[in-house]
Amino acid sequence: MTPDLNHYLLLGAVLFVSGALCMANKRNAIGVLMGVELVLNGASINFIAFARFNPIFAIEGQIFALFVIVLAAAEAAIALAIVLNFYNNHMTVDVDTAEELKG
Amino acid sequence: MGEAPHGGAEVINKNSGEMKIDQVFLFWIIAAMTGLSSIMVVVTQNIVRAATWLLFALGGTSGIFFLLGADFVGATQLLVYVGGTLVLVVFGVMLTAQGPFISMKTGAAEWGVAMIVGILLYGVLAISFFTGNPLTVVQPNQITETGPNTSLSSVTLGESLLGIEQASPPGNWTGAKLPANESSGSEEIKKVRKQVSYLLPFEIVSVHLLVVLIGAAYLARAKRRRGAIA
Image 1 (cartoon, rainbow over the protein chains, first blue to last red):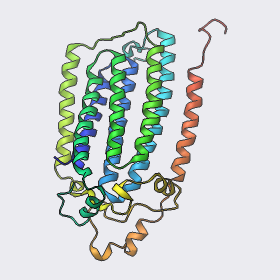
Image 2 (spheres, each protein chain N blue to C red):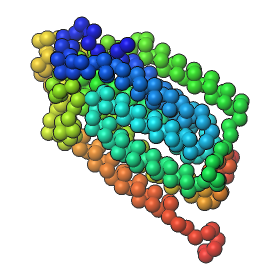
Image 3 (cartoon, helix red, strand yellow):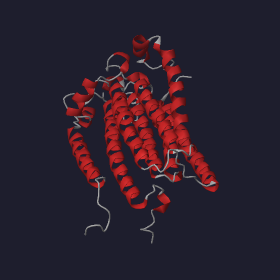
């Protein structure tokens, strides 16, 4: 079965849904971070697929995928710094214990 | 890709000829690997195993990029994501580990709700792909001027980033082919698709990355204990 645009979009949706569930379901803060990475990868797959299948986005799709990669690296760096700070203060990375701001 | 009755199909088949079957085969292999790995990231309760599954998911994504003809983006994905970001995540796992194997269990009720939400969300996305999407009529045979095997070279990518070259051919936003008399680019289309440079977004992203790294270094620096010295 020859893959067309929809197959790539469905693959991107698998990554997106997995990442969203990962963000919602994991109690480890680093697991949540992995979920964010999966969501961004699903978006990148969509960008590249549209760049391939829609000629007027041939450049734009790839450039935006590059931006997504750079922003994901920045996001991972800052999120890990926050997680390390949280670990220094609480001696755990369980996000359920971060409740000081609970109203 | 070859069954498409559109005009440009022969161009790709001439270039990639017998690669077609391999590409289809590779797509299903890599797609299955990527999808299963990303699902396993969610399912596994062990954070170290989740990091390993994430490695395969990210590597499979770069394989998908290569299959889609985005060589430079695939290589960047391998270098930055798999080589950089994932190593950062693994270091985070190691620095916050209380034991060699950590597991913070999620309750069974939460799992049930998550499964239902996930299946519903995926259903909504899949239905929206297959119904009323004008982009689904696009065939991959319209890219004819981007070199052998339809992959953009990194030179083209860099030149269009600088605004030197406009590589994306003119066309409708839905991806449908222009009428034959407009395929060379009418005045209106040319006015819309003027020379576009991505230099400013590139600079913004660069400065953003610099600021973020300074901020990360500030946040993660070794602090003295709270209240030790005021």
